[in-house]
Image 1 (cartoon, one colour):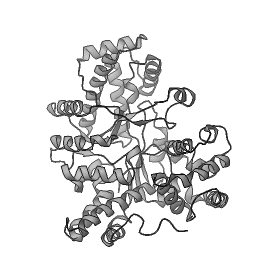
Image 2 (cartoon, rainbow, N blue to C red; image 1 turned 30 degrees about the vertical axis):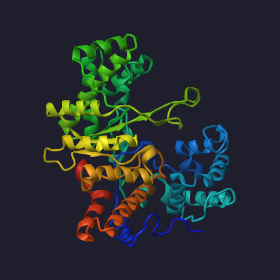
Image 3 (cartoon, rainbow, N blue to C red; image 1 turned 90 degrees about the vertical axis):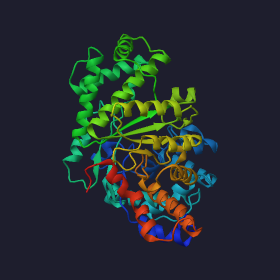
Image 4 (cartoon, one colour; image 1 turned 120 degrees about the vertical axis):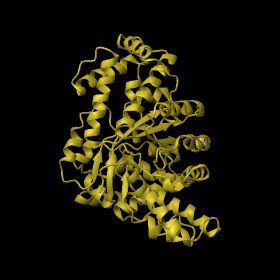
Length: 468
C-alpha cells in the first residue's frame, strides 16, 4: 500500500509545482545536528535496522512507552530485533503523530520500502533493510552523498580534540564536516562535581594551566580559535532561557573560585556567572564573524527516577514555560550596545513564544546583513507539519520569510535526512495555498527563487561556511 506518494503533503496544484520545480532537487546544508563525528570519519557501517534507526531515538522511545512497551525494549537489554518488533507494533498507533510520517518517509527514501510498518510486515522490512545496509551506499558517508548533503555541522564540546574533524578535513570526503562550538558545560558552577572535571579537560585540550578565572577565559578563547581553524563558523547554546543578570568580571571570578573550591553557586550566582559568560561568548563570535545559535525553552530531565537510571537524552524532556522577552531583549541589547552582536539564530521550543521571538528579532536587524537575527526552524517537539507552519507564519507576519535559512536535522540519526524533504513539502504547501487563494501573486519569478533560497542558498550565504 503506497502511502508516501509523489505529492505527499502537497494539497494544491501550485504546491506540487513549487516543490517539484524549485525545492525537490536542492542540496542540503545541515548546519545543526548531533551526528557523532567518529561515525562520519570512520564511515560507519550499520549492522542492522535497529542500529541506524532505533539505537538512540528518544522520539520513538516516548511513543513506545506511551503504547505500554516495557523499558527493556526501549533502552534496555532486549535483542535488536525484539526492539525493532516492539517499534513495529507501536507504529500503527502513531497515526497523527509525526513519527508515522517520518517512519514511512524514511523507509521509502533509504530502502525503497513502501509497505506500512506493523507486526506483519516487520520481518520482511527487517530483512530487506539489513540486506541494503550491507552495501556501501548506506554507510555513513554514502548516506551523505545519497541525500546531496553539502555540509554538516556537528555539535562539539570545547574540550574535544577535534581529531575526527582533522581526519575528515584531510580526506576526500565530498561532504564538508565542520565542528560547532557548544560550551554549555562552562556554565556549570552550580554543580562543582561536573564543573571541575570539565575544567580539567579544558586544561588538557588547551594545553594550559587554569589557576584562575582569567586563565579560564583564555583557555575558552584558545579552543574557540582552534574550532575556527577547523572551519567552524557556528556556536550553539542549549538554555532554558537567555541569561541577562549581568555582573562584573570580578564577581564572576569570585563565583568561579568558589566553584573550583567545591562550593556550588547559588541560583542567583549561577545566573550572574552564566550572564557574564554568554556576553563573553557573544564577543568571541562577533570578532570572528560567526553565527550564534540559541536553543531556548527545553525543560529537561523531568523524571528524576528515569534520569537516575538512564541518564539524559533518553526521552524525559518537554517544553518549558519561562518568561523570555525581557532577558532576551536585555542580552541582545547589551551586545548591540558594545557593537558585539553576532549573527544569531534563535530556536524557540514553546509555541506560545513564537510571536515574542519573531517580533524580538526585528529589533536587532541591521549591519547590512540580510536576516542578521533569525527565528530558527521549528525544533524538537515543533519539527512537525503544524508547528513548522506556526513558525513560518509568525516569521512571515513579523519579518521576512524570504530571508529564512530553513531546515536542519537537529538529530543524532543518519536516518533523519528526509526531514529536509518533509520541511520543503510543508513550505511549498503553505506558499502554494496562499497563491491559489490569491494572497500571493501567481508568479514563478517571485515564489520560485524564495522557495529555492529557503531550501539551501540562504543558509549557504548567511553562515559563511567553506562550501562549494
